[in-house]
Image (cartoon, rainbow, N blue to C red; front, side, top):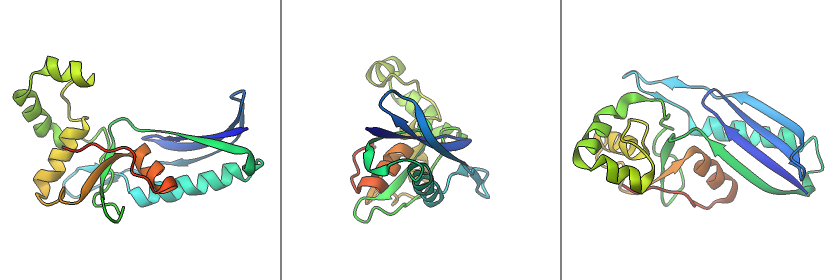
Length: 173
């Protein structure tokens, strides 16, 4: 029995194949390229990340008996995410990194509109530009129609969708 671990990080992304004792048998890695818009906001290209992950899976799995792989685990970069078209599954936005501060005004609005303690007790999160909700509100402010057929997925959720065709993780504002 073998397992694949996928780690999509802010700086580098990695794929490893592990045996049932947790010993790594093979691995592949790629730099996670960060881009900058003209307005100084930052983003990751979802199609590039998907292509890199698919290539790393092929590379790492090609070094082992791939038929023995029984599971895949995916982790990714905190609150980073993107909007996908609910019907087609195509990206509507680029991936907004957790570290992008463009949603700071929306985070301040959330903090002013809600009881911070109640929000923390419900979610375990403090109001911050890092929150997915603040990022979704920022995207919506830039384009009020962006949410009409959209689903928010984390980067791990996006890769899981690309692997399975199932949008199993979403946050709706």
